[in-house]
Length: 295
Figure 1: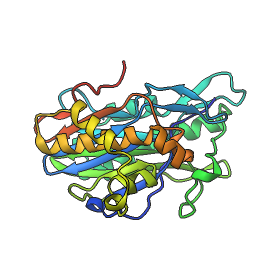
Figure 2 (figure 1 turned 180 degrees about the horizontal axis):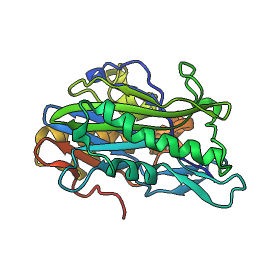
Figure 3 (figure 1 turned 90 degrees about the horizontal axis):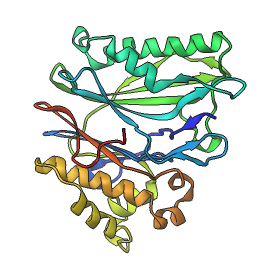
């Protein structure tokens, strides 16, 4: 069984902090502040064929580099792994291949984060191509409802990179996709950073009621999630704490019964253990206290 942990489709900005909402069935929140980055994700993984929950403790955020150089992280969405043609074994893992490729390269050798991503993820791209040529797998196709008509081909996986490259805050998006089983050229895009603007993937309807144009006129059905997040999420840095609480509240709301009734397609795949990470110029990558992924 392929493991599907969501897809990403960029949509227009909302009113709240000019945030970006992405209506898909994995919840990820990425926010850049002057104090550092906040990245949060849900822990649910569903089977691609039947949509059933495989795990509620799936890790979707990973640091890049060794313990002394971890100032970058990636979050992954899409098909986390691909099974053999006869569906008897898992033959390709994006997380395994990405970790192998990033550990083999020093980020300092590259002038920009996008250049590093092209080299590191180019190696993953080649491994994926080789697996297909060897007859080990077929490239999976996402559900038709998750396709973005503005993009070419069928997305296999997207990797979102955030953090500091040579002390400069940077953000890059990498996309693996195919066209009729022909692996297309790796897509690497430098993304702009807007201070304080959350990049939210999940339910667009929930985002609008919590933070967007409809928030002022909504019945505040998600206020309980915001209050709970304030009690649960702590951080010594005030700016990071506020945005971490916001991310936790949004993901929690997307996984709740209210969201499921209102927006079932994306919210049915959102849930499980929320994990939250921060990246700062001083301390690098760290898990928010109490929101580490399950080992």
